[in-house]
Amino acid sequence: MQIQIDRLHKVLEARGRRRSAHYKDIQDGLFTRPIRIGRRAVGWPRHETQAINAARVSGKSDDEVRAIVAELHAARSDEGLTKLILADVAHGLSDNDGGARP
Image (cartoon, rainbow, N blue to C red):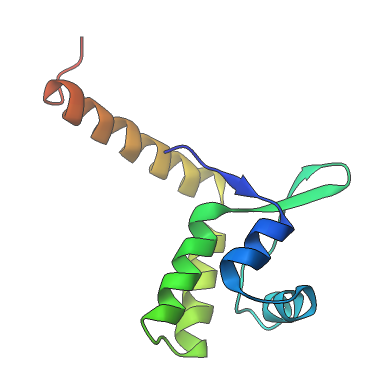
């Protein structure tokens, strides 16, 4: 899994929100916290924005969105990311050679 990080302007565009509303959503647990990508730069994993947008499109309640945000934050842990990467590698192996290792 290639994790793509979007800066604030891309996230705001994808969400259709203003900066102040976006940060209020973070404060209210309705969007994930940013990750530091430099000394003075932050961003959001694209898949998190997509997951939250999909939840909104499907009509999830604020409480359901908060639960999704909590799951996304938990998946950021080293263990959570390792599981995602290993699953992606395993999926790639099975797509390319039937799961057999060289």
